[in-house]
Image 1 (tube, helix red, strand yellow):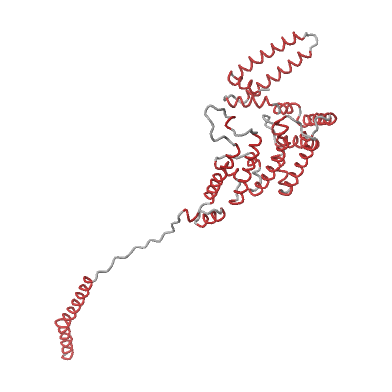
Image 2 (cartoon, rainbow, N blue to C red):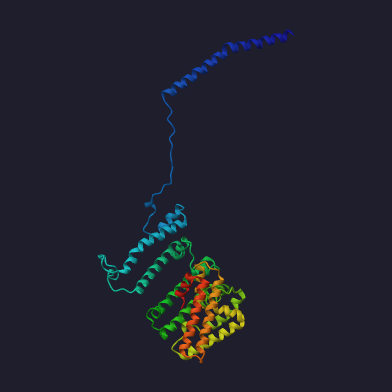
Length: 401
């Protein structure tokens, strides 16, 4: 016990010595050290941190270039959207070529307000020559844009306005790259054919034998180009969607709600006849050819009637009549029930048949025939006005043959 007490007293004495003497000295030293550090801080203040801003700002003059390919590359390097690049390039080319389009018309710079529009022109003009030059410039611009940004400017502008043209609607069964290839072929040979047809359409002059041969050559080359661009299956779909034979059958079947099988059966008959007798290649001054063509068409109508049956054939013939299309346009324009067009067409058809019978009646004199036909026509007008209304009836009369 005495030993334990002695040890305890020694420990207690050591703790008292540390607490009363050594610890205060250590704390005083730490305090003095802090004070010296604070005095140094006051003498030399620490500078505030500098904010460094790094930007990727690019000015427009760094992007623009007289070379369009370089210009496009720079735009893509800053992740400019492809649609925006297309819009920029198309707008720039429009501006670049605008003076060339303006120069086509050759208008006087000092026109007077009392002069007619024709006198504004510096020289004699031909609107066909204007159209030809405009088309050449359009083609030039179209090829440049296709090469630079890989799009067709016609399709691009139609798409921006929410439109689809004829070929775009009809060629949807093809992938886009083939669609472009087919459009190029069609437009190329359509232009070539139009160049030959213009004189006939504008001046009323029949095409020559040499021009007729050229038309046949154009169609053969177009067919060969399409064969190379399309698979056999795609070519069949192309014919169903785009060929003149298919278009003619679709026109005739308007309003009869034809089935796919009815369409195909008539199309196959029509296509066989068209392949043998193309009216665009027919020499209408050759009576032998004309008579053979007319006989072939008569045989075709007989085959179609046998294929469809009498009732459906009459609906088919109705759809082939432009007057029926006009009647349908009238009921659509004035919000009439669709069956009104069919009823009105039946009235007109009945009047035509009655007029034909009257003219064939040899027991009546010509004046009696005229009077009877006039009475039938008056009855037709009254019936159609009641059926369609005055506004729709006037619309039909203004547009009927």
